[in-house]
Amino acid sequence: MAAAREAFAKLKAIDIHVHAEVSCHDPEDPIFGEFADAATHYFKAPRRRPTIPETIAYYRERQIGFVMFTVDMEAGTGIKRIRNEEIAQAAADNSDIMIAFASIDPHKGKRGAMEARDLIENHGVRGFKFHPPIQNFDPGGRMAWPLYEVIDHYKLPVIFHTGHSGMGSGMPAGGGIRLKYGQPMLIDDVAVDFPDMKIILAHPGWPWTDESLSMALHKPNIFIDLSGWSPRYFPEQIIRYANGQLGHKFLFGSDFPLIPPGKWIAAFDEAGFKPHLRDPVLRDNALNLLFGKDDA
Image 1 (cartoon, rainbow, N blue to C red):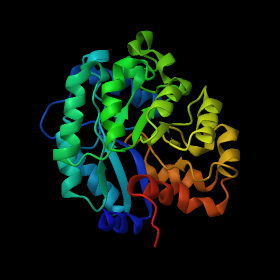
Image 2: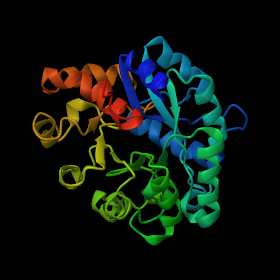
Image 3: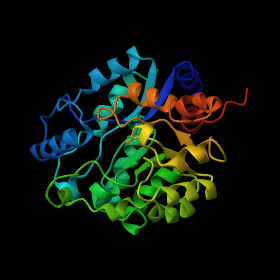
């Protein structure tokens, strides 16, 4: 762990929010293709998504570390997931720059909890990703508790999508995605019942931004990643609280491949964050969350 922390500390930044959308083994799921088409239009991003090896090369060239995951949304959408093991193996082969988080649909119950334990113990997975709107579950409901119990036992971090969903935007019925499950306050019970699980609220959480800020102020185990939006469009309270009480709680995340990290960082530098926050937000806060604080 110390060697990995040292390697990541030498990088320019750590992107906590990078998606794997193209498998090296399986063809694109046709239902996912419909969502990808809509997201391409919404984010004005290229339709062709990079493979996992292409993403690794992209981040290595820029000397940026990253956390990668897929989203297991098989129950909510019928989309076949990219295998967690594929991402975990890529991270093991590139451990100086890449960390694997897993995604397991909470509808899988105890079977999903058993898979989570195996991924942690045998595949080196270092955290988990949930997207309640697209996975069609209430994050504060008991269905996900078996998964949370495993994650909490190993004291691993977890990323929850919060706020509006670019996925499904513009599709008929929003692609069937229920935005209500993206309300940050639904996760407050999780933070109370699983205090050893570091919870990252992904995105500024709009239109519930103030809920995310309140939770990060109140709970030591809650953090906020700033992915999914260009910093030029952040609600003003994000910058105000970063410059004040919550500078240690914000994490750089891009939402790659929909938002390139270089473009995000350039906008961050112009958004009004105090200069002394640049390294903490871009790298050091994630370094402490993922590897623990350096007491040297």
